[in-house]
Length: 174
Image 1 (cartoon, rainbow, N blue to C red):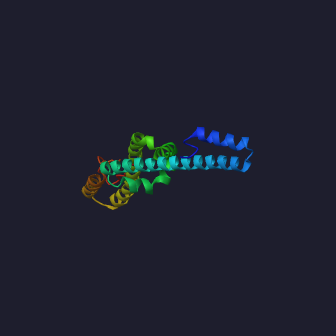
Image 2: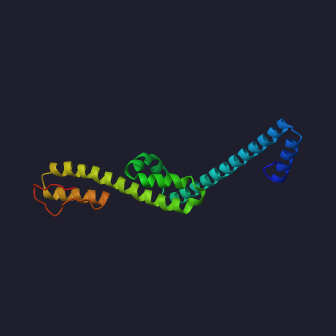
Image 3: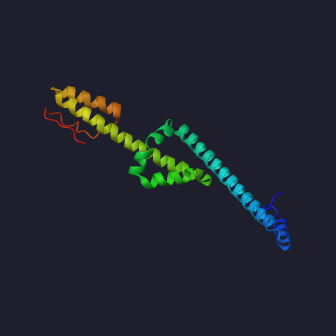
């Protein structure tokens, strides 16, 4: 048993060494207590890190079950998230390193998933909008334009296009 777990022994040994003026022994006792304290703190930090890692892995596992591919999306978009939503990114980073924050981490991951999905759908709509614009404007018949608009709406969902105007001069708005 070391000095850290037995403070009375520590004080008794220090007192005995000091009364006998054995200063080298006194210094060794102090050093041993310092080493024991440091090792104890490192063990606690290692345990906390392991608990945080386990909590993070469990939260990611639950997110993968709810939203397949989430882990990969989060990893590949962390920089974007940091730029566009810095407080969310900071909160996620903090919660990922705090073993007590698993429930909060799940909520933060859900929010990040929503943000990433919005960013992705915005890019998809923007990209598909450009595709629709170039293809629609090159078509000569309004029925062909209507079919193309319907094709893209079926593929990408509701898009900010004005399909009601079927004149030859139709322009997409986004």
